[in-house]
Length: 418
Length: 140
Ligand SMILES: Cc1ncc(COP(=O)(O)O)c(C=O)c1O
Image 1 (spheres, rainbow over the protein chains, first blue to last red):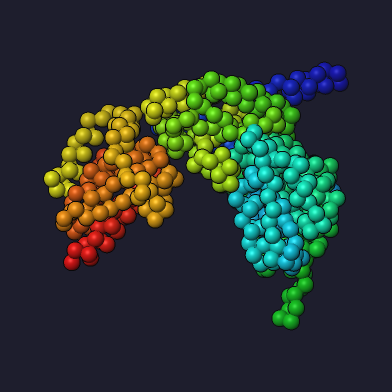
Image 2: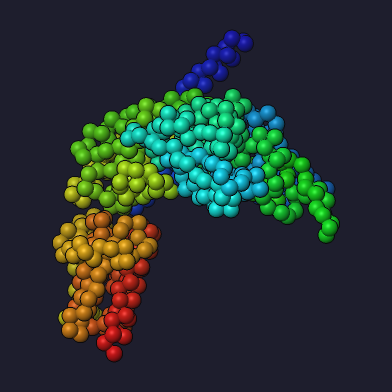
């Protein structure tokens, strides 16, 4: 009996079936411009499975209440579910303590929280190091921090393949370096950065490291303890969760050092007009009524993806990436930006003589959703001297048939535009 | 021809198309046929903001008429500009200021453009009218 169960369990784990998985996503049934939707803008926002939508409906239908303050049943139920979600997130990213998980509105909020916290810690002459392939949300808050403190920003350059040049990074590090920040995966190129090496090298000179995990989290299960990272940021909407919620992981030591970001309710221990004392972690950083439903749904999204399995997801997405890369490269004049061996399922490309915006407009008419433009990473576009790219990003609910539709669409658009 | 007549002509032309493909193909053709702006006018000052693609517009007076030249790095955008220039170029500034732009909706341009491009269209019309206002004050 036991043996049979094990067998069934194993079979279920290894038979990854996109046709079955697609049934979980109501939106994939819709049409766009009279054509079945082909959704390849997953790096901007992923779609939401029924299992997560159900949790959102259940929250507003059955236990919508403010948390952490009410004595009544609804409030307690909502608080329990919200705190359970925090623990799910903690377990997923293997944080040592649940109070090291701060709920935020997403990656942008998480980075701003840390950047603001360092205002009183940095001084003129300190140095921060950023990578050349960051999303604007991992550049601008630090530039603002530099303006407030007089610290300066150094950049780790990248090569033609879209990989960071580590030798140059090591040269930039010194005892002046106070912070290093870099994405785990680039949204514009798909490159998976060697974050462990980056973190270890920074720690050797005593610098703290923030890794922007927004693009990695949907594909890679990061272990924050193994990485030994100081801060790690995630947006739920890129991994089957709702918009407007995400997390900041911070090592307890750091979160205790950083001052609160916003003042208000929930984040205080005691308030008098003379002095206010702050609440303990994580509440110190969670002023005001949070996105309660969003946090709970974030937990449900992690449950959903873990039930499928991150190894299975990565293996299948890699298959899609290889298939799409091969088929797209067969189109004459097509160039892919971001050609590292180590990539997630993102393809940024252009066709010689075709503006990405024109390509995107025609693909949209064919029901294919891609992203065009600079993908909030203008420095990368400047590096390649292009106005932008067309970006197709695949998720585990996409199929090879959809990639065929994309390839056909690109060829059609090319014929129209050239 | 006055602005109104030109607009009617354009609406007529577009009414012959059966689907978005033909409309796009036509706009791409228009884009390709747009007389190029003199390179020296492709300055940052002449860039219209609000477009995902770059758009340059230059205006100058020829007698009492305002002449526009323009360019873009994206071809569909160029097609849109070509339509706008055909309507507004070689017209008196006051007529440009007074002209309504309902024809854009009538030819279904807006609904076939992505929101960012539609915003770009609005900025383009605004910019052409701004030029007209500037030159009208010069003429007065
Ligand atoms: C690498 C990366 N960092 C940060 C962000 C910003 O995330 P959010 O808009 O959810 O705050 C994104 C989203 O596009 C991203 O791809």
